[in-house]
Length: 408
Image 1 (cartoon, helix red, strand yellow):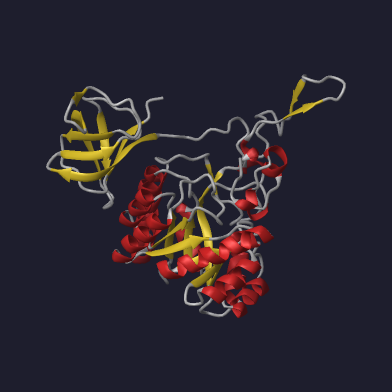
Image 2 (cartoon, helix red, strand yellow):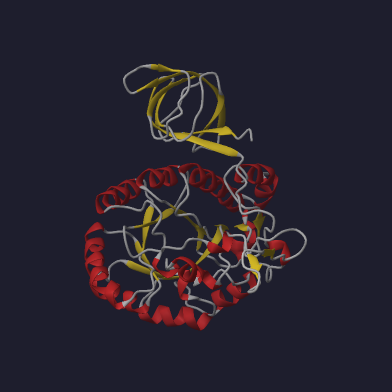
């Protein structure tokens, strides 16, 4: 079986490094403009240069998003942006807009162009169209079944690559093209500013009775009528490989390092096990499922891969995440049993926490002491983003993730 690329999101330089260390073959990131995640931290030019250098030093590729649907006023800035990217040398640009595509081809023809899922790529003729224009890869619309992907694979050139989302949030609108956010808040989803109104709770108001809210029920289970379950294909890796998909893409360019580490490490092991032996992959299924549930999610489904979703693909009673583990921080440096971290959530001396290692091991440890940057002893660390020195009962290593089971 052909080895697929594992493509992992990164919201910041620290998360990029986590993705690289926890098993990504490639990462996709966004700059400060022209991508569809305006609320993500995103990368300054300096951070992007450092991230590309770090990834390349570890044999990992970097794809940069420029997938807005551009207006006239975007084009001058986009032209300058492509000139900057030409000097940074990412491995690919992810683009949806034909005008942006042609501009990128003109300015940096040596960089691969991958056509974003936002371009609604649902048939083999569309793939062939982009191939003739010089696109190396097309990202499939999330609305395609595996049977449709197999047919596309059979009717496009062998060197034309197919990229598919295999894990993460699903959008209620077709391939993410949505006007709800624009209508309600003036924030354009197609310019990266989506406020996610599909996750909101809705009611009906009768004109003559203002202020009287009548709940909208999909059925008796609840009122979150647009709230899709998350996609998860960890149990179906052989089918994805057999369909001829070249790149397995994880959604989540606004997620934490814990999410990225958890998903990257789990899919890395599942893919490698499957390529070694499908029997080995089947035998380790309980571990994959247990680990993948340790990152935030809204229950799981298989999306459109095995047919059109039905009422069971929605979450009606809540718009909150399942959150089994809490992210404490990433080890920036280690000296003996001391971990240097930027703290993300509160923990206390005496707590039992877990070291999550890129190798796949999870090591339970006890927090023996906490000190701030000046060396002052602390019983707990309630302030987010505080730099800490933590003594643990086992030796940590750089890039280890520290997490603790959520007691709520």
